[in-house]
Length: 137
Ligand code: ATP
Image (cartoon, rainbow, N blue to C red):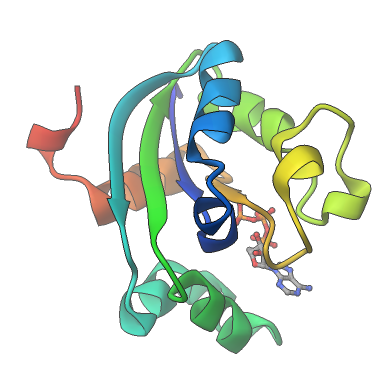
């Protein structure tokens, strides 16, 4: 697959890291196909993370992801999903490799700066959750 979906999460937007994070993505060879600053309601955040609804952190995650604006993006690159997960690093920043986006910008396992799709199928679903066909170039 050659696209993935990402969000810059509320803490990183709040801390003025949209530019720094997007720069790392572009310098790693990703091209921005679609991009929007928006805010998720609790209901929309709950839908987005529906797969996690049985996990103990689901309620907190939904509250956090709707706590402020986010930036949603579709990114293009060969091998996008896997290469992007390498670029962002481990979910828990304490375990993230040096030089990864989460190592640099994440504050905690929850406020971990960015989302990255975990499969080609989810990249499609998540991209369509935010963007219409006329918003991707
Ligand atoms: P993402 O789906 O955001 O790219 P991920 O695939 O690295 O993250 P998941 O296990 O799918 O991680 O969890 C989704 C999100 O839920 C994490 O990015 C994080 O914000 C939050 N989360 C995961 N584990 C925990 C936890 N133990 N405590 C609090 N929040 C958590």
